[in-house]
Image (cartoon, rainbow, N blue to C red; front, side, top):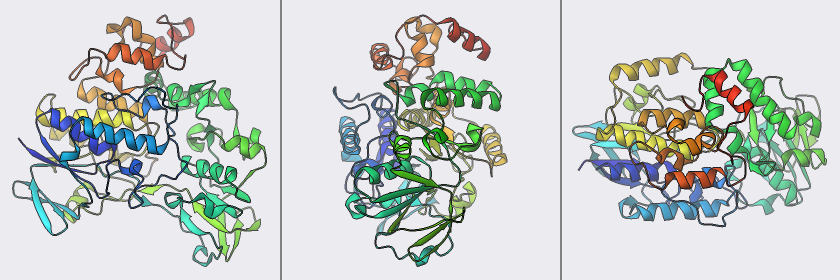
Length: 496
């Protein structure tokens, strides 16, 4: 039985270990924190969650297919509930006995017989290694002239370090950024007693609430139909379709008093926040352009206005950081803060026996693609599905490298289908007449990928039907005329 080191016991590491174990490998998980769960553990040494943080993806899409959430869980669970869920998942597959907690990995390098993994003063050889340490460890704070001079008593921090809302009560706070963490924390500060909250950004994004007419937004935006449309339609046409969905649901930010975004939703970007736009409309959050310079407590914006603040929080994302990889591995992967050369985000032909899980930059729910990537990885290594050839991997990496310098963010449904197809588990709607609408227009739930192929479950159909209909958005198995027309345009009719 081959030993496989799995670096990280967050969602990616846990699901990778689960499927490696079922494929006959002996996984050993290395976790730097005192508990499994990664970001969801709440451990200050590695977690960026804040006390009131709830998921930005619905419960249906924040779970793995082997373990449904307990009945009665909120549509958007708390960070603590997801942390507890991951501990239950680990226990279900006896992963705690395979996990070494409080054990940060210092180096991975090639060695005779496989890969040397150094932790503390020890070094062990593993035939294979899976790196699942996540993309959200190294906070990115942009260069701002004079930032080091800021003298507000609440200081400067990245949103990853936002742990104590009381610190900002009665304070004037600037939140820089327009992604989920920036807008959610700005809303949190506003509702928890900050004296004044200003958000600044380089470009105004379109903003979706978490719920649209009582249906979670990720059930509408991250569907198989949306993925097929993005694959099949010209970018401008798909962008117009996505923008129409957003505007029909919530309108445009300038209607609330925020700046007007770029006409192209791809140029502007799209983010998720339940309370942000209404708080802007109420005048409780003010929106400004980007920071020009800082001088003491004074912040000057690019429109020339200046204002004093007590604290600054940067919600400006993360850089890819894998400091434990040897220099030789880093060179092979051409690794930098944004890029890592991998075939389908997983393998490199010059690094056999080394794989990566969860290293892409994505919008939308992470649990479905993480599980599908873990399945493909385990199946490819066990021989259950054909592993990619060196030539295939080289071509794929060459295509990725040709896109360097372009935006790297992709969508959860596209990544999920990429891995489902590689693992041979993408469900065929024609085989499931009662589930056709749900498979195309419903949520991309992990259980929908247990309908057929390896590890199919007999209860998958009934569970998926229940999850797809949970919010009333997919009820009848019949297609409307408008839906049939859409499918025909994509060449993906329900019986294809």
